[in-house]
Image (cartoon, rainbow, N blue to C red; front, side, top):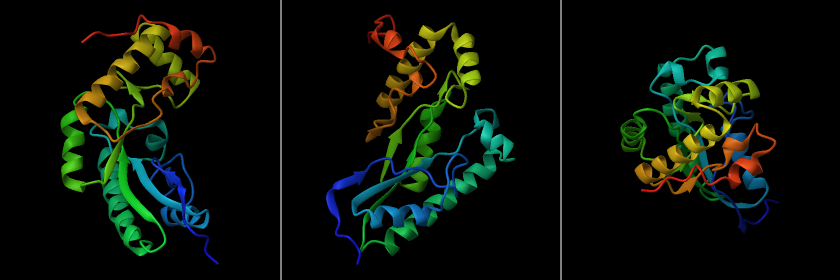
Length: 201
């Protein structure tokens, strides 16, 4: 017997699937079925958006042999499949088709074109790059990016400044992992308490 939907069980950033994300597993449909089995009332599915430049690709995407054209086609396939699953399981769960953003030079016009073309139900505004350099894939990458921007405190400042810029430009319904910048910093409390990053506008 299928469990009744629990109005308190929802997910606004419904995870990534192995079909459309190199650091995930399970198919999109398997993930949706798992949400239904657990009695979720509604779920927002938010795979990563594609990039406009090969240099921005995640190391795992490069290792898999992807280029920007392939990631764009994969993203289009994701939206199409998720819309079909949205209809297929409409009697069991309310699904919202969205995507997770990135932040890079020229991000605003590129992302707004994606929104116009694919018409997501909503977006999750996230950052995985600082000054077009990744920082969350490994400790080595984190340290290299921190060094390139002038140190750990500068990395935090750039991250939160870019996050603010993204929020102003895109006005996302959800801000994803807003403190991701602390991922490889065991003493992150010290950096988060510093006020030197604050920008007045």
